[in-house]
Length: 144
Image (cartoon, rainbow, N blue to C red):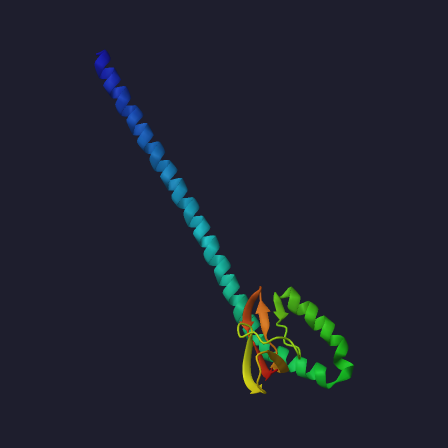
């Protein structure tokens, strides 16, 4: 009789351990699922933000040209820079004399020959988005 009780108790303990393992596995699976859903949501948010930013780049180009053409619009430049920073956008440095870097600049014209290539003119500004190149700056390169 005692032996039967031990066998029955062992079976119950084994069944409880199996149920506990199932519960722990289910809990871990649910936690992994929840984390995966959060990652997917964040990726979707980032994609939507990126698509929106890409759509406003032509508007930013127009604003830059307007600010350069009309001195009375100069105060807008600072406001535009602050807004771009809030959106995670920043301009790629492409001022005259800056060394040409093919990773962030797109050369569409070249002039002169020499070992050192510098920017002679910016034809279209480039932008970083969250510290990644969103669009390279379109420039004219001068060899010195």
